[in-house]
Structures are given as C-alpha cells and as structure tokens.
Amino acid sequence: MPRILLVLVLALASAAFVTAEAVSAQDPQALEITNHHHTDHDLENDGVVVRCRSCGAPVAYKKDYIELHDTSNAVGSRHEAVLGNDAEIFTFVNPSRAEFELAGFKKVLGLEGEVFSKKATVFDDYSWRDIRCSSCKRHIGWAFYHDELQQCINTQLVESITTKRAKEKLLASTAEAERKAEIVRKELEGNCVFAAAGWWTYEICYKKEVRQFHEEADGSRPSDWSMGVYVPDSQEKDAAYVGTDVVQHFAGGQHCDENGELRSTKVVYSCCKSRPKEVSVEKVDEPALSASSTGLDGCSLQIEECVTSAKCSHTSCSVVAYAVGGNM
Image (cartoon, rainbow, N blue to C red):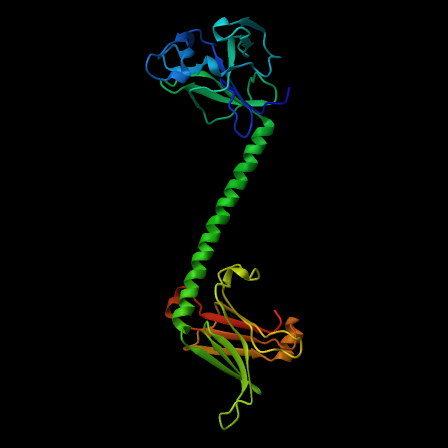
C-alpha cells in the first residue's frame, strides 16, 4: 500500500496528499453511532452518522468511512456493521494503558488543533494534533502527519513566504519606478538637452529622438545624424535594468558604416549623487573611449544627464541619464 502522508485520526481527505482521519472512542461517552434520517434537508448526508455524545453534533458520516492505513500497533478490533459489512474499529493503547478505539473516515466535521506532537503516536513516523467537536469543543480524535509531509509543508511555507516577499518587493520597486518616471516626465517632457564634446554636439529630446551633429560657426550642420527615435513601452524589454531605473530606447537611427547597423540609443534615468540646479549633461564619452571602456563598437556613445527635481529631495538624489548608442 502506498504511504499515506496525512492521517487525521478522524478522516481521509484528498488534496495535494492522501489524508486519513480516525474517530476516537477512547471515552465511551464521547461518540455514538446512530441512524441519521432527514426528511427535507441535507440529503447527501442521509444515513448513518457519528455524533458527539456530549452535544449531539455530527462529526462524521458513514459514506466517508475508510479503513485505517496502518493497524500494526493495534491491540484488537471489532466489527461495526452499522458502518458497513467489512467495517472495523481498531483498539489502541496509550502509555497510561488506557484503551481507545479508532475508525477511519475521509472527512470529519471538527476543529483541528495547531500544536504538533510525536508523543505516544499510534502510527510510526507520524506526529499528531487534536481534533475537537466543532460545536462543544470536546476531544474526538487526532490528526496525524507523516514526517515527509511535514517537511513538504515546511518547504511550501518557506516558498510561499519567499514568493510573497518577492511580490511585495516587485510592487514596491514598480511603484518607485513609476514615481521616478513621473519625475523625469515632468522635468523633461517637451524639452531637449544639448551637450558639446569635442567635435560633436549631442541632442537628447525626451521621448522623441537622440541626434549627434557638428555645428559650424555660421550655425550650419555639415554632419548631422539620428542616433535613434523613441521606442514606446520599452521599459520592460530591458532585462539589464530590472530595478527602479527609468529606461528609454531609441532605435532606427542613421546607418553606421562601422558595423552596418542602424544607430540606436539607450537612456537610463537613475539617481545621481550631486544636485545640479538645472537640467544638464554631466559627461559624454566619445565613441573611441566607450569602445575601449564598455566593450561597445565605434558607433557607441554614453551620456550622463542629471535632472534635478524637488520631488527627488526625499530620496537625497536627483536623476541621472545614461545614453548608450550604436549596435545594441
């Protein structure tokens, strides 16, 4: 017979594990087996019922009767015809030499206690806890848990707590990311930020486009190309930034001769240590530098853009943007 992991000394309930319960008749005044007839209600339970002798409340029904999975520690048994032709109630002895009888059911109407014990268990490798009448709270049996099931329950409990905490952390992280995204939007929406770095000038227009150009003294731009146009809803597509950073992607820019790809840019907004008084570009890494320091190709660039906001004050930081362009 396969091992039954949960034995409620009163009922056998199947969920994730097979469950057995047994009704205790240790106190002959505790339980009685009677014929149970209804005339206009509770038809599915019509028939023999095990009742609490103290208050008369039903605790089990004949239709739920099952054999005990292990009777190796029993000292005797007797036939109980009212539960079925082959029904048996088994006698066990506790350490005080008091005898009590158990009958198995797959369902019991009772309250299961919270405290586990392995003391004087009637089933080897099982711990138990009390089952009491749901009406008068009188003891009517026990619930036995196999050690393997306890380990499984403990593992599931730890996993459940871990999952819950992870969800809570994700919700908090999402809320923080949304808060930062709103700060960035209010500071930058409709604006473009410019930064000169040697020969080149870089233009980052919020949720529109990133451009790279050279401007002559007369204002003309003999070299001017797109580093990508904004790609909506790209935040969750970037697995490299899974925290509270605000990520924007720009793609489909000017063709890049160095790698044959269309130029693209990634802008990551996060908190910076300094608190500039206005929106500014703090740092621009030229393509040759970024190629050696970040492993990107010659079409790549990196820009750090700080955005100051009063709403950032409670986090003791402003917002910084990193833009990485090229073959990404």
